[in-house]
Image (cartoon, rainbow, N blue to C red; front, side):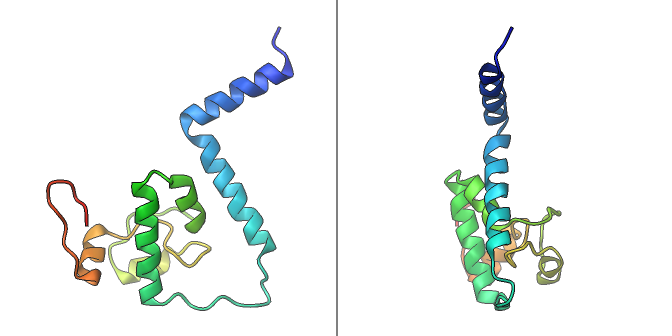
Length: 122
């Protein structure tokens, strides 16, 4: 018969293998920070420039496989891909950043960047 400690270990291992445990930890962190956030002082509106900077930070985090850290930045509802400024505004997470990544071509146009076609890097 399995002990409680053994069951906990198996459950933790299973959740880690499925990639769920890290997401849950990130979501809990986001909720704790949200609860501690001072609502008396309103956040400034997210400027277009900061939206793009935040999106580049998210891309960096996801490229380097820091997906749980990136999920804290975008805690909020999950929607489909955002491809225009109007769709971005409708899908903002708690941080003011879109809950889903901006369309890569939209970023390329906005930043006057170019992609290397062989590996889709900016």
